[in-house]
Structure formats: structure tokens, C-alpha cells
Amino acid sequence: MTSPGADAPSGDTGQPEPEPVNPELAAAVDVARAAAEDEARPGADPIGSPVLTVDPEAADPVGAHVGVEPEGPHAATHYFESNYPGYVGWRWAVTVASVGPGEPVTVSEVVLLPGPNALTAPEWVPWAERVRPGDVGPGDLLPTRPDDPRLAPGYLASDDPAVEDVAREVGLGRKRVLSHEGRLQAAERWYGGEFGPRSEMARSAPAACGTCGFFLKLAGSMGGAFGVCANEYAPADGRVVSVEFGCGAHSEVEVDVSSTVPVAEVVYDDATLDYESRTSERG
Image (cartoon, rainbow, N blue to C red; front, side, top):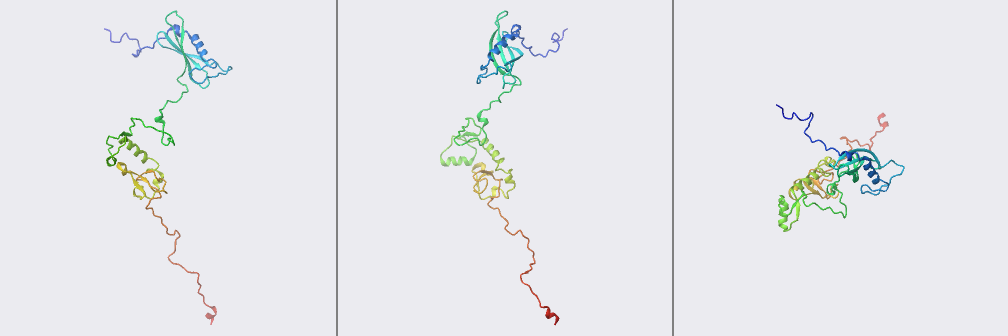
């Protein structure tokens, strides 16, 4: 009785074997190199970039043959090193094809591609993900995405009673309002920012903003943690501050105006001198 898998070759991993390269296409290295050299001739534009100029005394722009890969039963791609300045690690990729055994080998495509260790541009990042706080200047426009998680449609309850009360009282509404996630993000940003309790200014302040007369409390659910400073001499004037922030311009700060020079309890007046005549003592 034969056990299952007894006919399987030793070391079989179950993975499909790589497709073999057509021998006639694999041998067409000279055809592929000639096509690459024609594409890389001085003044050619291999990748849609500005026209490249090659020093006639420089090395051949097409370097050594570095491999061949199958593209199916009737096509294969040969790779050659590129000696173009500024394209370190790139490779010329020449795809050759043949319709069958004994038929001529033709060139289908020649391109310059980055190799495994090529120097390439960083991955593209959409502009919406590149913008940082403070990037918007005068005249700049920064539209929000329709699905911005920080905003919610105005016809939905904002889960902020103060906001809902004002909207009903005025009889107006906004197309979109801050969502719960948007408020949480703002709170985290303000709390950990320059005017939060962890800043150097707050740690050295005599008292917190929550007890300052210049502190204007925000309306709604954010009012328990944040407000606006209205002291023109304070570093946070007109800025959102945490109730735990503070500075030296607190409305109730007191300064000791007493003299710092110690004064003795017994004072001697040396401006007036008392003296007695010595002649009277002898008499």
C-alpha cells in the first residue's frame, strides 16, 4: 500500500513552480540590448522626463545584463543596468516576443524602471493629508471633505444642549456643525497645546484661568474645560485656554510690596549727641 504523497518529489512545498522562460526569448539578449541602446541614445526621452543629454565620453548608458523574467509563453523581459547619472539602481526593461518556435524575435516595449535598490520619489501623499496647522495663509482656501468626520449635518442633533438651544432661539441653522469626534479632537489639541495645563507658563503661574476674572467661559459642553482669555496684557489674549492654564496676569494675583530690607526692632538715633563737660567732673 502506498502512502499519500509518496509520489511527490522530496522537498515539495506545495507551491507552484515558476513559469519557465522560452529558450528562444531568453537567448535574445543581443536583440534586447540593441533596443535598449537605441532608446538610450543621446537626446532620447526614456521615461517622459526632460530630454536627457549624455556625455559622449561617459560610460554606455546601458550596462550589464542582470536577468530575464517570463511574461507568458510568448514573451519575456530582459533587464540591463542603467548608467544614467541620477538613476542609480534603475534598470532598462526590454520586453521581447515571438509568436512561436523558429519565428523572429521582436521588441514589444523598452522602458526605464526602478530596481529593488533604486532611488525613487517618496510615496505620494494627498494634499489633504499634508496640510498642517498654520499652513493656511491670507487668501488661501482650504475646503473640507464631504465626509469629514469632524463635522455632522446641521439637521442632526449636535448632542450639545447649548448649541441646540441657541439654534432654536435664533431660528437659524448651519449646514454642518461639529460632531462629537470633532469636539474631542479639538479638546485634545487645546489641552495639550501652548495654552494647556502642561505648558511651562501654566506650571509657573500663581493661579489657574478658571479663577481669573478675564476668563470668558465657552458655551456648551466645552465650557467646563475651556474658555477665552480677555486680558490684553496676557500672552493668551484672544486665545482658547484651558481652565487649568494660567499666567502671571491673573486678575487676583497679589504682589508683596513690603520692604525686603530687614529692620531691627531697636532703633538708635545717632543724629543727636549728648555730652558733658570734663571740667565739671574735676571740680
